Length: 284
Image (cartoon, rainbow, N blue to C red; front, side, top):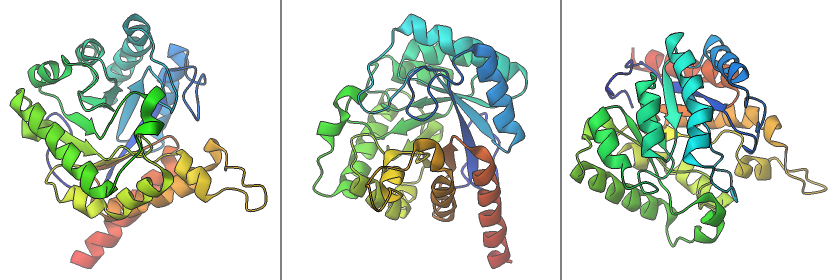
């Protein structure tokens, strides 16, 4: 969806959000970028390979993960945000804490990506309203340590849409402006493999809600399940799921996603440009 967002460029194609996990325990690359200098270098490399913005997070949200302290999250995130922003990178901060969001934006972040959609920290809504930056509202039912038992739906697409709409209404009532809101179906968060595919197949229903949609499928378990060894059933390792991720990026861009969030940027950056050229040719 080509909808203007405050403080961000209005691209004529699906945007590519590169991932920088400043964590020891993220599911696919935990520990690789824990050192701030390594994290900054990685972020700059993602931009060089085609990322439009870089999402910096200091707390793993993989299934079963336990939370880190606020002080530790700030220590991990803020220096990396500051250095990347100073280098001209469009930075998003991936956090569920209002204090981290506030300090990251002060350090130069231009977007807040909250996997809890503001539910984990009651102060988040007012802070984001005051900051005026775009805010990713992800569908979320509980912390990572509990998410698997919460993956119960009668109609996953209808329920996710309804719960996202309810969350957006609550944020608007708290002072967040509609122009700030970006929606995310929360792939992998309290979702089974079947739920994730149903949400992707129904992405048009989400984009029809009238706000930009972020799709974050990169390297997730449901792709590993799809690509599992046919003889042993062993899941495809996370770092070998990038081609499948690029395929999801193509289909998401085609379905109207505002952005896709990926670990390996180059393939997806090329893919979304192909989609844009294809669509433009069809409109001419």
